[in-house]
Image (cartoon, rainbow, N blue to C red):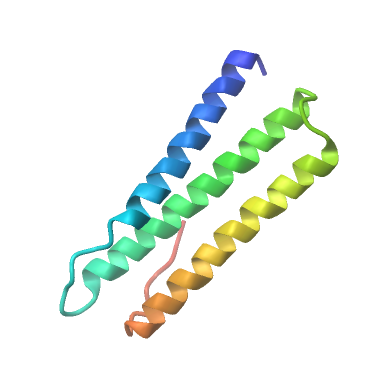
Length: 107
């Protein structure tokens, strides 16, 4: 992969991170039955997964280009997955507290 393509991956990573942070920063409007909150939470999960995947792709590219070590690459993959799983657990807990535990979480 060329440095230009790598830069494109970095842009994608930054965009995915910014989209997640922006979404989390704008909670849903209050609603009576929790549908808006459920939709907001499911969108947050999709954005979290996208950001974790973008980080993993960026790390893989960095390793393939010799910019990082195999240990750093592996650590970044673990970090990305742990971060996403923490987000997923938090959102599942919030949905269960709202009585929306049956929400269909899919990718």
